[in-house]
Image (cartoon, rainbow, N blue to C red):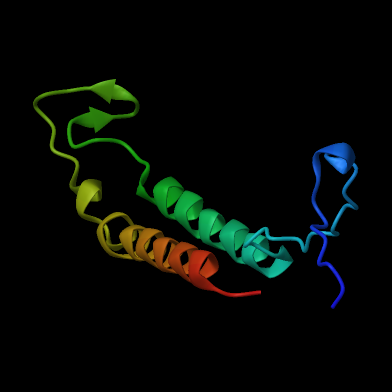
Length: 98
């Protein structure tokens, strides 16, 4: 019987051959593309929500005036929908495998 030798010894410590490592980064190019699309939806949603508040007329605060524009379809339906769609896309982008 031949004597079994240990491949790791103190004399060759630090001289081990480098084992090529596989790229272990989870996100690929498609993930980043979907993340940017989701971010764009979120930004557009917040931009659609912008506008004057309830007591602003021509950029000036007037407590005697009520602006019904705060209840427009764009600001209370479409803009939040864009934001929610953006967040759903972000979740998809994070969970999508390469």
